[in-house]
Length: 314
Image (cartoon, rainbow, N blue to C red; front, side):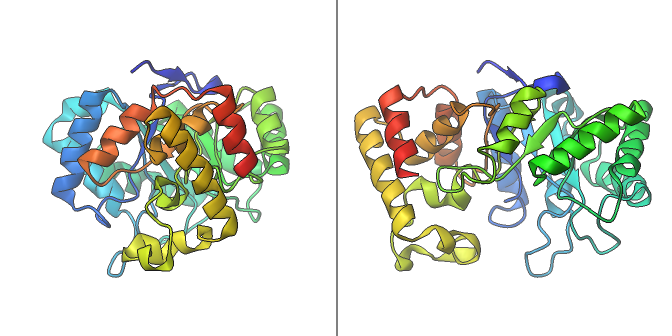
């Protein structure tokens, strides 16, 4: 699996990114570690987590996904050098939230401790914090970069005007700008990224790793009726896609699957990989078969006619 360059960050990442939000939620620690081992063997070298994962689970407070990863690194420290590690800050945690310098300097230490590592390869502002100036946030990140605790930075859930403002602040302050963007983007949800945000990222060589590449699993094709919405993911996130538009997209995917022999999840991720501005999509896996699909998606090339069919449906 050939790595790809993540825009001006210079990081070389796998063409599909392994989403770790499922760790200690829909997959336990032992199974998570087994999937991580298989992932590395298959050539996926990029892991995406966040401090807030997975606070939404009853009995959790955030940091559980990072903790699972930290135990995996601790069991064999050589694994840390085999992956590009992404985590995020900004979501609500018991001790704080947002993008103030004080919170960044405090929470990065918590993440490093949970991850049992001395560095984060790509540190994301998880969501905007309009109460904190970009100048303050970026200066705090610059201190982490200079100390070696963070290699480079990105922004998630920022729209084009916020990216433009942050770019101007970084230039004025002579500090590292956001070099990566993580928007919600998939066959169903397209308006968040397509348009001004995509144009900004392309113009400024900002690498793009979309989340919800499978629309929380809806684009796997296994959710077609209300009866299919069982389990924590279906009830929490997938129901919003189950409508006439969603079913139209699945119908188009059915046709492409018939033509290519590929699974729906592979088609959804291959569609993303081929879209302008996208570097690599993020997707989770909770089983060997799902991981096999992630690997297969990295080499699946859709025809122009297949892309047109999917574009029209979505």
